[in-house]
Length: 184
Image 1 (tube, rainbow, N blue to C red):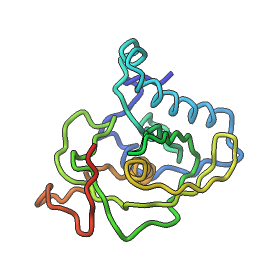
Image 2: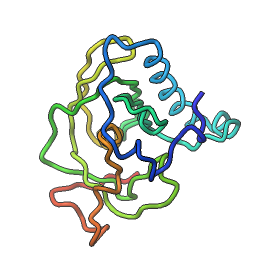
Image 3: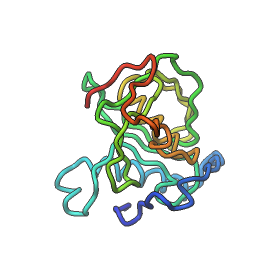
């Protein structure tokens, strides 16, 4: 089981390097790693389990955050309509995106960053992702709103990009062009 001590923090070199594709079909080791990512995210949202194991609540986690430089990620998040988006994926790739942008009005956070980083993080409002499930099935997912933001945040981890790399350094709260805020 992944705990907070397994999550590496900003400044660690693994967080700044692009992760390797996972050879498919996935090995049992890679499947176990991916399962542990989704287990962490789900368990971290359960107040009893989170408190018992000292888990910081999260809605997404990428393998580089546990110092495994492979293209794996897990997301467990509910959209504005109450629909649960729960995925554990190998080799996710954004295959198309909207021109329109969005951002979280409250800013983004990260399990690998133990400080508040103020500012808006521009993201695509809608994305289409292709990936492989833990069972090796290829899937195509269309996302918008918060789930789209979470996917982009986690895929950035796979590319060695931190969320604050997108924040306008001169004016962190400058509204991104053609962007609609999401309140969370």
